[in-house]
Image 1: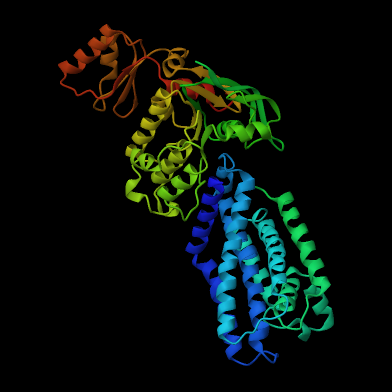
Image 2 (image 1 turned 120 degrees about the vertical axis):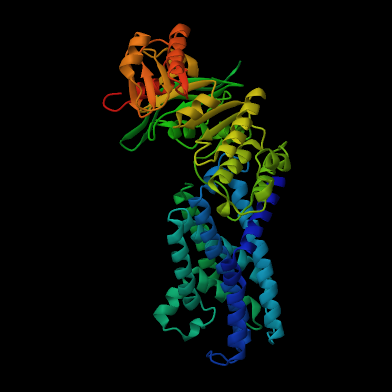
Amino acid sequence: MRPLAAQALAELRMTARRGDSVLLNLAIPLGLLVFFSTVQVLPVSHPVQFLTPGVIALAVMSTAMVSTGIATGFERQYGVLKRLGTTPLGRGRLLAAKVAAMLAVEVVQVAVLAGAGLALGWRPGGSEALGLPAVVLATAAFAGLGLLMAGSLRAEVTLAAANALYLALLLLGGMVVPLSKFPSGLRDFARALPAGALSDALHGSLTAGAAVPGQAWIVLAAWAAAAPLLAAWTFRWE
Amino acid sequence: MSTAVEVSGLVVRYGERTAVDGAGFSVSAGEVVALLGRNGAGKTSTVETLEGYRRRAAGSVSVLGLDPGRRADHAQLRRRIGVMLQRGGVYPSMGPREALRLFASYYDDPLSPADLLRRLDLEGVAGTPWRRLSGGEQQRLSLALALVGRPEVVFLDEPTAGVDPAGRLAIREEIRSLRSGGVCVLLTTHELDEAERVADRILIIDRGRIVADGSPAELASASATAEEIRFSAPTGLDTAALGEALGAPVREERPGEYAVAAAGTPSRVALLTAWLAERNLAIGDLRTGSRLEDVFMRLTGDGGG
């Protein structure tokens, strides 16, 4: 237990030290939430009701996919992963430490964003408990995508690709712009992606009178299984 | 002494290219062995096979009686070996203290990070991130990280590359104390002087094969090169006159550096110094016998080796 705890704490310290990850994980979701809740430009009647679950989905994506992918990519490039391969830590505990650190960051993100949402007038309702499995499945799916890039591309390419994917999924993920405003073909495509499925699941579970569509669970579960498997299969440690 | 590392008939290939081509040697506990070779001779591939990073195409290797190529054996080995990679291996944002504490947490009975920081003269930069350390500081931290788990076998890949003279002294001192603690140390280097200084035994590797194996003195004396006397003195000595006095040809190989093609017997050395003294000429370096450098150049020379 001691190596695992020490490694998880080290991962957390390094995440907190990286300015870009603090910006991406906290400042951008918070900024979007505050801006679009205050400035009425989104095509929804109660922006904060729609935005709070949306930016929580965005925050989960940024932590699990972008932060983890970029950090791991550079750890691979700097030979850190190689070096850890000849310590007793082992790959299993390294991965477990990364997961623990991701979940800890997400707890902080949800607390900050939900707190800000409440302050801006968000009124959650519905079956909030279902948000938890949605976040866990999405974390697995996004971390799988991040590690898929980190384990096969050069670190700089991972950096660019993860950020590009983040921007694309921010727009296509129903996080800031509702999927209901999309043309039907694009909407179906967006709902098959983990981002769209997560925001459907969070909107469904955190909004009074709404429900999580069955398709969202299926899509999330499929990505949560496939992405980590593919990452494990293709990952190169050096 | 018990055998800690045993390699026989090792072959490592990268696609079509053969990096290690039938290397064989063994290293005992408490012994410091340098794997000496030019760049691309197969040093790192050999060591990385022992560390468990590379798959071998043929041959057998054993570290502490375990096979680093087998997953279950490697899991046991990771607790008992210390590794210093040729480059990197540390989180760029971590300073020496934090990195040492983290690595110490991986082991059941680690050395004290504070002691290691002091021994390797890293206290002044204990909080400086890795990416801002000098090359020598990075190497010393890598060595400290290799030692923190009290390893029984230590693999050091080019430990003194890019290290300043003071840092080299600290690293050599650690290697000496490993030897006296009964630890087996296998290091690679392409620097002859370094190998001669730190190692009990030198393995010369060329094109993936071990071409010589012995103590620095054994290797030098086994050389077929004729014995000679080398010395430095002011440039432009009358080599013909000196040669006559010594009864052997003398040549000025580089300005101010001379070689006498004869064995360095005490009487001949006395003649040489007397000849210089009569002319009131200063003498610098003076050494006799054949040199390891000659052995190395002959064994690993270009064009047929």
